[in-house]
Length: 90
Image (cartoon, rainbow, N blue to C red; front, side, top):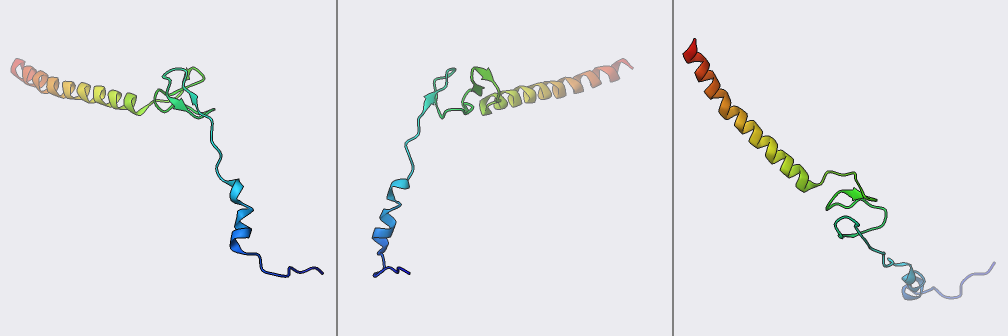
């Protein structure tokens, strides 16, 4: 049975795998906001995929939270005024 005559060095062994590194990936652009984007992925900036809105973005969630907080504060501010008006009528 054939056996190697000498040990193969680490450099020679590892040079076989030197070409298997990472490849350059293609980037496209989001058709909605023109942000650089990997193919077949949802845009994280605007939430569109193939021209359809499929994702709620962080900015939209923050706006919605702010609106909800303002509405809650407005309700709380008007509730004590209504209670005090109701007590004086009774």
